Length: 64
Image 1: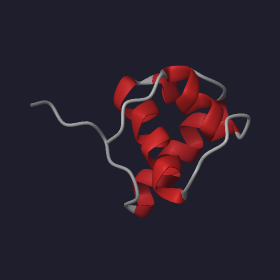
Image 2: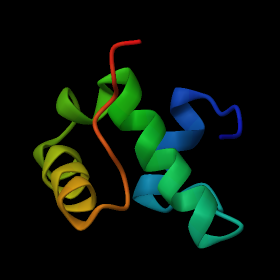
Image 3: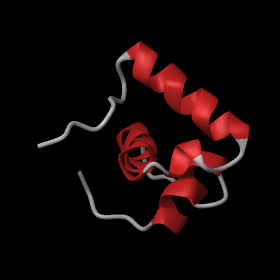
Image 4: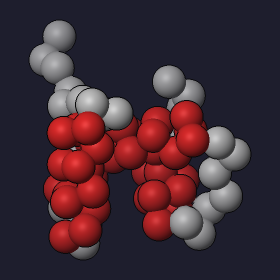
């Protein structure tokens, strides 16, 4: 996974930061899930994260 800031990840999820490809878009969502940001932002972030997890595109972070 590439390194990105919280701002970049939120921007890609919302669409105000250009996302070069679908892989990076999903990496941005995974970043928001891993950091827990998606659960503290507006409600649609959490709902979308849940959808992506259910679809198998993203996953919950593991304790390792």
